[in-house]
Amino acid sequence: MRTPTPNFAHLRSLTGPHGTYEHADHTFARVEHGYCTDDVARVLLVAAREPDPDADLENLAETSLDFLALAQGRSGKFRNRRHQDGPWIGPRTADDCWGRALWALGTTFARSAHDFQRFEALRLFESGARQRSPWPRSTAFAALGAAEVLTTYPTNESALSLIGAAALVLDRPVISSAWEWPEERLTYANALLPEAVMTVGSILGDDRLIDQGLRQLTWLLALETVDDHLSVTPVGGRGWTFDGHRFDQQPIEVAAMSDACLRAFEITRDPSWLAGHELAVGWFTGRNDVGVKMFDPRTGGGYDGLTADGPNLNQGAESTLALLTTLQNARRLSRVAT
Image (cartoon, rainbow, N blue to C red):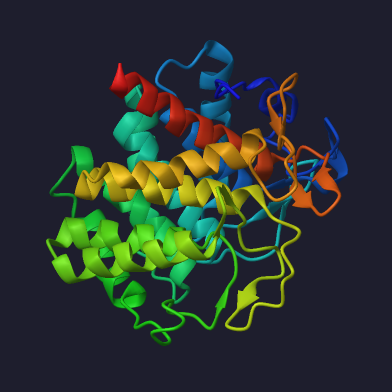
């Protein structure tokens, strides 16, 4: 199947007065579930990565940036939940919402064509970068944002400091030669971890960290490849002893693999890494354990999960954004090739 181009129609349909709704019932936004910073940060990330955004996508980026500004407190931490009517729910933390927000803000600073968005994103990033998180995935997301800042502002002290702190959190030994992973179980967004390790290593000029990230990604890709397709870690995770349970598979796993393999290619210039990204695209277009497409060609929405009986036909924000980031990666590669 020919690789589709990113279609933002469904993402736009999930937009409410304060941001992008988190959940959907098929194609209809579940307004009653409100918003979350995790997803709004992903929206800003996708918008910042789009080379030729139309007016609607630029407005979505602006709305998302405003959302993150309100989610962040003076400490630099973020609230993750917002009621459909606007009030915020829960405390501000340095959990995943913090890390994803910094990733999106750093990317917006590096790539936005609008000076106001760039300066506002940098201001929010620098405020958030004062925080530290003990959680590897939260730290990994934030480190990718710091790496984006450094592409255009290589002396930025906030980003450099965050990269140094991330190295301490992410530099962990693998469990064993049989389980070449720093955790006893694979959980979520797994390929993010080796991507962040090799990215931090590249910035610090630390070949050991680069090699560590590449080895872990090599192991993960091999583990999650069955025959000629990806079979990613299911929502319940996967431990040393594989119980044969392959479902439900989440699009976020596939998008993380696409990002990580392209990062490995950018660092090593080894074209063999492009095969991992192509497997990720294939998972969405039908090369998966069930042999079904994992997106709606009409709406551009991504299906919420792959079950043994086929796709979960709900098209929530996380899944749609995972699809869009993977297709953006594919389009970027095709433009470079031509």
